[in-house]
Amino acid sequence: MNVALLIGLLLTAGLVAWSSERFHKSLPNWVALVSFLIATIWIVFVWLNGPSEGGTYADQSYEWIPRFGISLTLRVDGLSLMLIGLTTLLGAVAVVSSWTETQTRQGFFQFNILWVMAGVVGVFSAFDLFLFFFFWEVMLIPMYFLIAIWGHEDKAYASMKFFLFTQISGLLMLVAIVALVWVHYDIHGIITFDYDTLLETELDSSVARLLMLGFFIAFITKLPSVPVHTWLPDAHTQAPTAGSVILAGILLKTGAYGLIRFVITLFPEASQEFWVYGMGLGVISILYGGYMAYSQSDFKRLVAYSSIAHMGFVLVGVYSFNELGIQGAIVTMIAHGFSTAALFMMAGALQERLHTREMSKMGGLWVRAPRMGAVTMFFVIASVGMPGLGNFIGEFLVLLGAFQKNVLLTVLAALGIVVAAVYGLSLMQRSFQGTPNPDVPEMKDFAFREMSVMVVLMVGLVWVGIYPQHVLGMTDAILPLLGVVP
Image 1 (tube, rainbow, N blue to C red):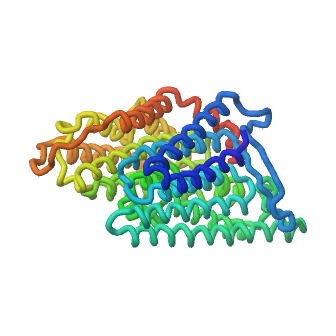
Image 2 (image 1 turned 180 degrees about the horizontal axis):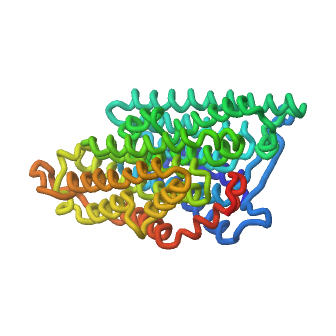
Image 3 (image 1 turned 180 degrees about the vertical axis):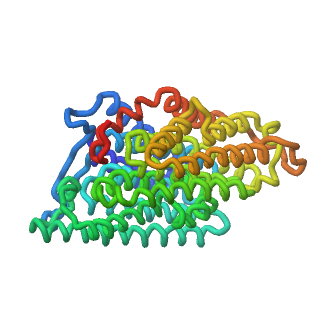
């Protein structure tokens, strides 16, 4: 697999989509959709062909700035391949979800979607720390434009808040990267940003703790976790539907990926010492996110706070430091990408039809749009952890792993599943059940375009829920790097 070619495909498609608007208004949508479908099919073929002898699906390295030990090192293992596949698939979902929503500057809109996804693919495949930071910044700017230009009523505030939180935390990570490189240079006399080389750097315990915190804060801000979560509800609420799909389905996963790939592996001893704080923040995020989700009357804002709770399970799983917990965290990342992307697409469809996100102005919508009601019910029960679907597998494994680490924190985390059932069923009752609101006009149900995407996401959740071995097997190679023996 040529990762550089895949990134180049998305970047080039973005430029083509931007320039194609002058020929036909809907042409940028087709350019973006076809590009994401080609990329997704390509990744499926790579997966079916299997990894090389080294357990990787791609491994490329080119000199970039040799004076400072910076190279274009792109590598794809099982974890990276799953997340890149999720990225391209949800890219197609984002395009379909915004097909009729966006009426202005569609070329530039699709350009930003494609460039965000190109940056995310780079994040999931970069094994040079400078290159990783470069892609981390590449995905930030287009996302800012998506919210600032095509967002809703408070888009200026939400986009600036998103930019400041992620940019400041990213700069903190950059300081930690440079400091790690300097420490390695001080010991070995070689300047390098190579991930494999820096893994072997011997760090003083106090230095390791400080550097680990620089990475940790950046990644839990993007995850997000309490207390650096406040940008997420505003960004989700004000973003266009495609922006919400990308944020929830993909960008949050870059924070979780960073914890697994960089924090735990680069600073193993410091991370082991930090486990109680990592798991504690995860539990707080689960309970706080669930409580705040239940108190919302805005459909999108409820789903946004539920994402904080689900990402709390990821944090708990990662810091359990055992096979069950970490694999559960990875399964949760994949399943959450499917379920929450679908719920945000549903929120966008409702807003496009009803011109409101307030559930108090809905009620009884199942009668008017039975296909939308059935689809929403499926993804709500998936989100609250129905057995047989992917979310249940992920959260169940996380709780099993966490129980081996700390019983009290596990019990508190398990309460989050009960809270999830309450706010999930409340969302369903207030929007699609109950007495129909007489002020709501007849509304159009899902047609083939929306239903085709929803069916794909449904199949993904059932696949992970019924036979999670495909996901679990692809994570085995990374477990030894985390100090876990599969």
